[in-house]
Image (cartoon, rainbow, N blue to C red):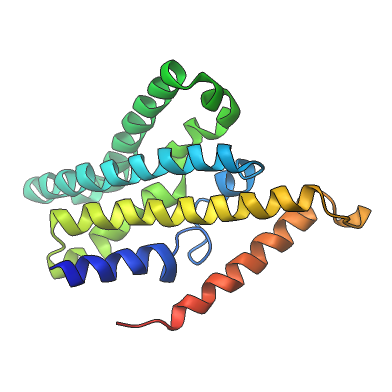
Length: 196
């Protein structure tokens, strides 16, 4: 069981990273990655939402199958994610107002973050056929969030270094950001050869 959880974790963080390999959750990846502190705050919020969403949507899917209405899974999953994001937003607004203001519009956009919805759907579609347990589902969600955090913090560190670099004028701004993101993605594709 522990070996399976380790394989799931390494796979979610490195081999099938939601941002750099599956290209899900690009909007906050590009929008909130200008500073490491902000990227780390967004990453922790996404880890919390992904782990909780994996746990709750696992149970919701079991109920949907029980009643024979599994075709409503996407709507149900989006509702669960919206509630979790609202909880995170209220918590950050009261506890860490500076982080709340620096995340800006990207915090409520976690609700429509493809990576968060993707982890819930992958739990059901990819692993549902092989009796994906509750523990495996939560571990997959949490480690996929850790992979998202790892990618966004790494990218934010590179972008901070680029701010003090001598970049040609025509590459400043979004062009160098997209080039850097693509190079980081290519580097992560090197993990795709790993197998257990």
